Image (tube, rainbow, N blue to C red; front, side, top):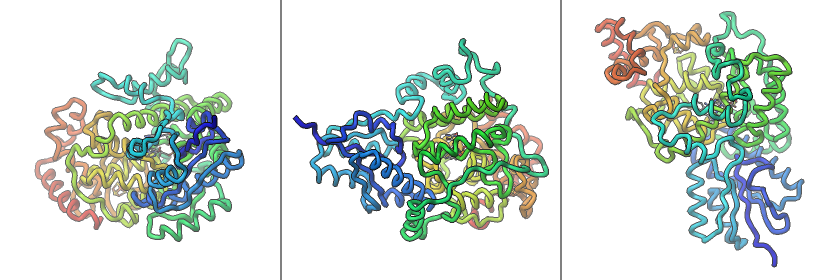
Length: 511
Ligand SMILES: Cc1cc2nc3c(=O)[nH]c(=O)nc-3n(C[C@H](O)[C@H](O)[C@H](O)COP(=O)(O)OP(=O)(O)OC[C@H]3O[C@@H](n4cnc5c(N)ncnc54)[C@H](O)[C@@H]3O)c2cc1C
Ligand code: SF4
């Protein structure tokens, strides 16, 4: 008896030959199905480089599958949604079995399950083996805990996977966290020579995609001129090796530093390759540990990097699936303002925002502190509606996929879930940006001035936020310290801050 034909759906962020979707693939009867849905590029307003990255990586992956003789049906640029294109194929081919790996996006998972139900399909939705922590493990860890904190989850991951721990489960170097050695600003004279990251010239497939995106999505934000992202597994591995050989050594210490026209600093730029599954986090961690030994790197930099992958990346994914769909609707402070228009153009007088948004539009990239403490901090202080902010982050970064973007934006940057996994809102005045960057030196505003024409909008809105939420902040031991400095500001000055902030908030588009 011949086996039934099974359709194996591979999504644009599941480009891994070892993917669970391809386990037990029957070359004689099964078919891989991939779809370039124009609907997906449009339902969020995506950066042109993000669309190009997905399309190019998908086309390269399909080419690899073909070279390995996988039967594949690859639908190019259809106006249909992924699920509608899938439905069409299932009906055309009278498919009864659908196999896929659980999508990273909650909405898509629901839609595929609903389709399978509706069509009476046998659906095998397999666990995504790319991650260290399964949903079940995360749910078990979170169960009954009053506070969900990265630190304890990260320690568990270190012990479970025997990473940077000794045989007794104690942390390498005697401590779990080396944050105090990291997170320094660049020297006053500037970052000096930073080893350039490896960049990839677009090949024929990527050039074709770039031309297609320019023609099809001309009004979408961002530029394609600097498109140099890895689009194949080979390139992603090259980028990983280059990073650990040349750039990892200064990652930790300058992890939070910012400097004009220094878009990448010492960061890895591996997030898009990891999120598309061109790289596996296990091989990234192994490469980092090997480099640590080979080059005698500081443990602080190695631990700092591993914390991002084994800690934060796994943690936010766990939180996403634990808290969806509520996470997308949370609005703890009930903020309702619209995102200022210049988030899409970079045309603002604030030097810090101009630089962070400008490089984002050029490259589809900004590093963590630019996302958290520049654009994210401003959006929280300016009381922007969280869903609009989240839409912006999802649109504008090449590595943005909802499972990782939403918890970082809504949960971490905007405190929209009221501190479900952060102890207090991440807010800062212009003084922090001045300390961590050179932005303020070229800005028309003054970071230390709280109100008046020269006042830094970040500073004004920071103090306004504290004044507004003072009672609540003082009620909690975690936030009490944040309002302590308000005691040093006279009542008169506080009312000037409030008045100036009101003006700013009413004219955000003019900043
Ligand atoms: C508001 C906001 C939105 C964000 N949106 C995204 C997003 O859409 N996609 C995304 O991959 N990351 C997102 N991040 C996390 C982080 O900023 C990026 O992963 C990082 O900047 C990517 O650059 P990199 O590869 O050079 O990272 P590096 O600084 O070199 O870090 C190494 C790797 O660690 C992982 N990592 C680091 N921080 C985090 C984190 N907080 N959460 C999850 N993984 C992390 C990434 O895989 C990254 O490649 C967001 C952070 C904030 C504050
Ligand atoms: S002065 Fe304020 S607005 Fe200007 S760069 Fe500094 S922090 Fe940003």
